[in-house]
Image 1 (cartoon, rainbow, N blue to C red):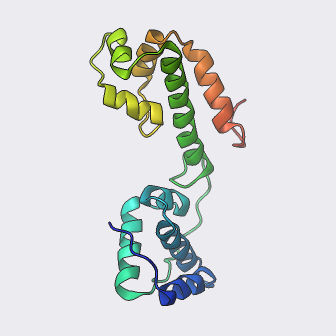
Image 2: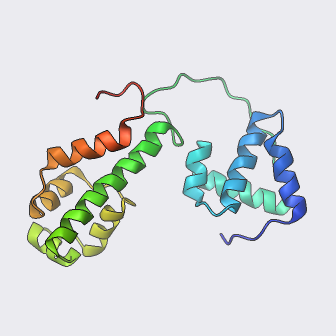
Length: 177
């Protein structure tokens, strides 16, 4: 979806909706504005606790009508550790993936290896491209793949996971330390 610029009228409509008494309309306005401000659909979705498809629908509806529909009322649900997108746990999980990827990248760079050399040293058929995704944290690395790649790079998997966990989840209440 291309990202057009907001007209003055659209900016005012979003600002008004962001102050609306209806919480659903406020959430929609904030999510649409987040997308227009240059954030990805996935980021806007995580912040609004909805799917990227919902963000596309809200943006498309706003582009077509210039307004945001009211929110639907839902009964309150108790929060859990495994709550849906947009929670502190989901954001910390993304941070954990990024920290783990940074550890892999640092170890590879320290050795002076290319991605192809790492996957070759691992002895399995991972592609250098997927290793790049893991290093950027854009995809979660499977546990077995982490063990294989970590071993090839001479990493202590337990120590790496502990550092990433401490860095990513330190601010989340209720998790073991």
